[in-house]
Length: 367
Image: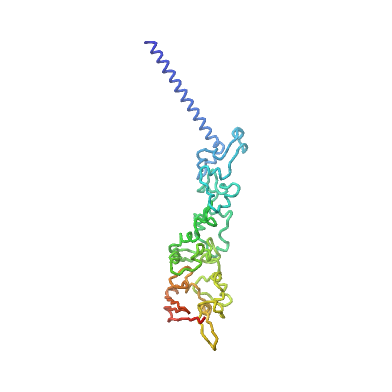
């Protein structure tokens, strides 16, 4: 019996020795592993100090991108370190963002992702090396210098900046757009918007509503039609226009300058529509009469726009986006606090116009 008790005591002691030995081995192994994990930060603790720290750096998973050789760990310094600086290192965790048909040039340059992102961390979200708008403008200058006296597009200058319209990596649209130009524009312009240019506060109408009208201005009907008349970033002209156009309903008329004033319209339309002497092909808005056996054509575009004390803007009669009446004619327009009504009836050889400020008038073409 005493022998049995003694054997049991020996068995228990051996078991305890084994358990403590094993526990000690596990503790030492974990300590070694922990020591390996923090070995990089002993010299490179600054890589974890940013406001936004990249996950591998935060977890000490430095070997995801770096391959230290023994000499680096033994002697320190910049030597003995292999670093994968290509996008393939990023794609171990991140999806390939360069799969679109149009790829950002930065992703085709040496360094790829790290052109814009700090792989360890940054004071800026998404680990950007600089604030977003500043970063884009390192390579791009989207807003013309003269736009300071003209107009700037708000999405370019707000916090989200370029990312309002562009994908920074790749896209199946031209210019890295996130969708088609028209879809992008109507993403904001599907409602009335209040804007401010300098001291002037202006209300921009619901453009989508205009484009749903029965008669749409031809450029505006195209998928990239907005860009025909508007610069998407900024312009030396008001309302982001791409060329000169009167800012108000009336302008100082002068026959030698009218064509320059309406440079925007004459990007597509023929300048001859404002000439005094016209042919039948120059404009359909004319009243023809016969005098001494000769057809005399009175240019009604010139009559309304130029042959007045103050030149009239095209916008008085025409809406540049869309309208319910033919020839994108407005149904009303604003004159100070009064809104005259305009009713137009199209005829095979001309038309008739009724405005609340004058009696009905008609015009007729003879050929």
